[in-house]
Image (tube, rainbow, N blue to C red; front, side, top):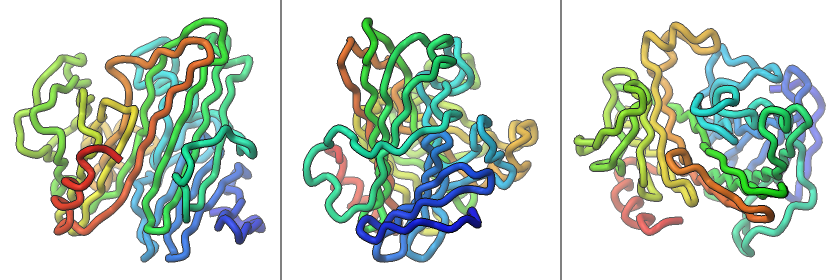
Amino acid sequence: MGHSAAVWDCRAAIEFTKDWNGIDQVVLRNSRGASARVSLHGGQVVSWRNEQGEELLFTSSKAIFKHPKAIRGGIPICFPQFGNCGSLEQHGFARNKIWVIDDNPPPLPPNDFNGKSFVDLLLKPSDEDLKCWPHSFELRLRVSLAANGDLALISRVRNINGRPFSFSFAYHAHLSVSDISEVRIEGLETLDYLDNLCQRERFTEQGDALTFESEVDRIYLGSPNVVAVLDHERKRTYVVKKEGLPDVVVWNPWEKKSKAMTDFGDDEYKQMLCVDGSAIEKPVTLKPGEEWTGRLELCVVPSSFCSEHLDLHRGGL
């Protein structure tokens, strides 16, 4: 993406580079050729490629990679607010801030990252943030790429405030699909959802699988820890696994809304689908000193393996 000289760390398969606006990026690679690119703008994964070099995340051709504008695509982190359900800007401020690399993060569970390349990022509130959201926190993010190409994001929010605070959170994952009309989601059957197109009215999902014929903007509540996104045309399935994130947001803007967004192509809704691991309906509350962890893992399998793969992981990660 950038033309600057890269610094290569052979031991960890990590490359440090910059985008065309000079903002630092970290590229993770595995031995088979898969990669993930993380921008310090928003702590955002902006690319995830498989061994064949195919891009698995959607980023709009009109996305504005210019701080402090949010990047349209990849996996933005929505914190401490999702959407416009609060006093802050849309989806909170974390996705618009410049994060730093955390060289000395608190330890994660042992053996969790054997054979994986990873980077740790950190966001702390600025004086400006504290004026609009007066809570001291540390938000840590570890992005890892496994030897088999799976992508994992682990976020930890710690309250270093003198009093409790509450927040919402979402990994706003934009998946790249062949054609939205050829895609279905399994794992959300019979769940209640809040429909953002109907003033967050509550409904119950009636279909065997969720398919797309028009705009969808829903928050599925109390969802299982594994959801599958089947792309019929590409004969592949995204398996979305999550922990600490009870809700799943499903979003596609369809034609009319796409044309109204300046940083989104008129027809690009056909090639994307957002499926977010999130904690929205019941905000997370942390007492002073407490920490919350939310984890998202994405993998891609041939659709013929999907049922077997889903059954294998129903219990969690």
